[in-house]
Image (cartoon, rainbow, N blue to C red; front, side):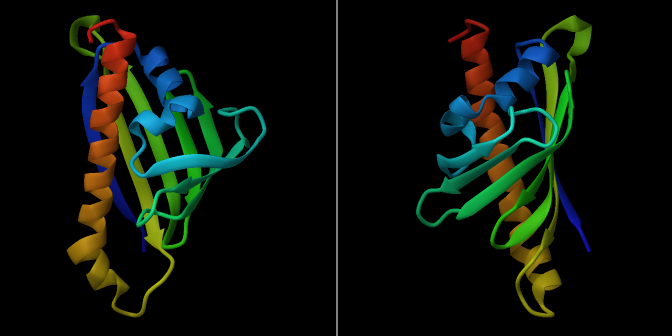
Length: 153
């Protein structure tokens, strides 16, 4: 059974620029929660089918593999696999109110890969909140980067 964690926010850049920023692997250290370094990259990221394998810092997610499954000017989706879960992470941007900036959404539709019969309870009590909180921290740091790109910092 899969679960979805989702967070939204606003950034002062147009939707296409928002997706470009999200897709820039060189900028991930400044906003992706726990990101330490890229281990391997195949294909022309973020083209469909391209893959990035990265590693988190101590106590983080470990080795994470992301493979692009969908790419458009206003969205990016990637199949994500790590030690404790698999799923699809999506990022999308739509035009903000009055044509100002963008509303962005980061979501992870995931399934736990380890654990016992109690993994559903563990997910409901601990994991889902931890995933949502991590996505929130990532999106908040991403918004700071977007402000910098817009010349507001």
